[in-house]
Image (cartoon, rainbow, N blue to C red; front, side, top):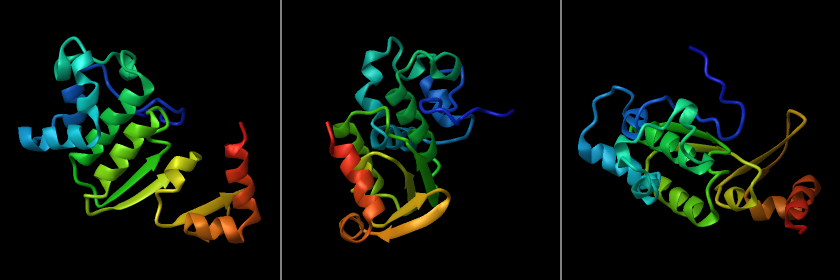
Length: 163
């Protein structure tokens, strides 16, 4: 079955409960489940849902906000303890505070984390930034390094700062 995950906010959620969307018929302990939902900050909104973790989320998670869908998808990944996790605009639907909390939690995992983002608050958290433009690497290094040495990076960052 092919899933369209190209559009932001369309994490592949199924018309089943929050818990089932995280577990996907795999065997995990209650402790592993609770750890994943806490790390992904699902626990911050679950009390707002009528049935908690047993709430059916609707087709493609239509009964959840973008940020809630994103957090369920992150919990789904974390419970599986990946060695490499690629997040493509994975926190674009959450507020800055929740994003900060999620990334703080991700530091506790022993994994390689690749973050694809346009959001300055996300980029600044990276140990290493790779600047891609027109399919080519145009710079790499820490945020501060690129600000000093890359006119393209500086232009992108300055464009985000304009109100």
